[in-house]
Amino acid sequence: MWHNETMRAIVRSVVLTMFGLWVVNMIYPDGLWFDGRFLSYLQAGMIMTIGLYVLKPLVDLIMIPLNVLFMGAFKWVTTLIVFFVTDYLTAGMRIQAFMIPSVDVFGYTTLQVDLNMFMAYFWIAFMFSLVIAYTKWLFDED
Image (cartoon, rainbow, N blue to C red; front, side):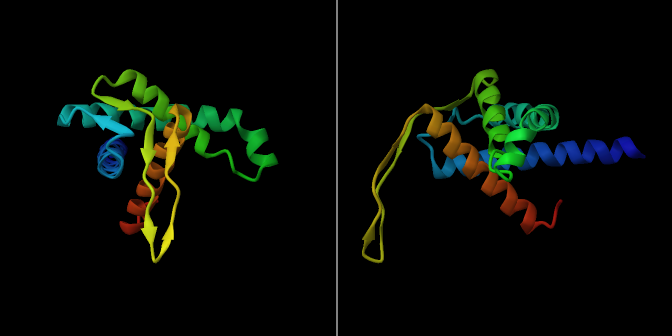
């Protein structure tokens, strides 16, 4: 039946979103804050899934001129908007300004980067998109 497949796809999307949020939270605990309850991850996963199913087509439609002009460089705006809405609606989740410390790799040192609120949203949305894309690739999911 079609509704069983649809429900499975929605549940899979919620679980994948929860996993992506958890991974990004583990990487940047100062930027993406959760109160540690499973219910907060579930609520954020459900809101983001609904946002990506409902808001994504609307924002993508509005962003068509910019995406055509800049060859798809503004696709990340959709995820950024969904993160903003999720942050606003989820009591147990916050995205806040944070710092990426300097790193020494093979004798080369990167600079310390202080991210304001907008850049924190951008960086968290970018990292979330990378985690989701890698996870979907890993499990051969379209």
